[in-house]
Image (cartoon, rainbow, N blue to C red; front, side, top):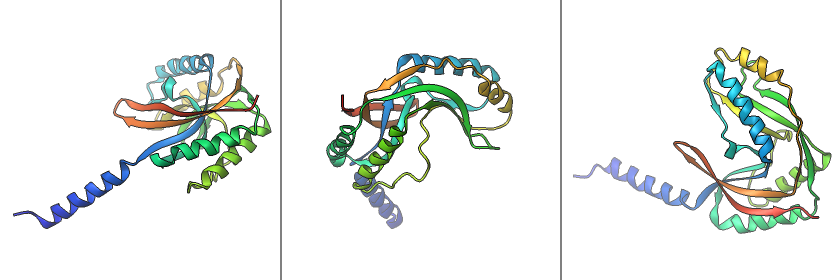
Length: 206
């Protein structure tokens, strides 16, 4: 005899799976050059000697996120890409420079990152991308735009202060680069870490 509660749960789970199968996790980002990624990886390797409980960002995950969309209907990807492309067509490439180390979380540090200096136009661009995304039902960003590359997420703050102290005092080689496109990426979360797949590449005007 079937358990009616189990049967109901199975039906609901099936409906949820069917619904979510039409969605993918996406975000829009600017890629950074390999020399900056190598610098970030070298810093990570040096900090690993502290054996802190952190999740290190892999090179493939080092992006300058402009807009995190999250769960996105696959059927809307083309239209979102076109809307973002229209925004990109209004801006020339941005000159960016690796300039600082930083930590989010205050007294309970949660993320260590590398910051980039950027022109005011990049903030305007981010706001325009935000407005374009809002037309597809995505919430506008409430936090101030702060371009950065996440190096690690801290899982346990026990014993992290010496590592953070060293990180804050690193003398960065201040690489510069010109961003010439925005990329819409798909992110699939796997046991081994996130896998990123480019969906749309949108060039800035020349």
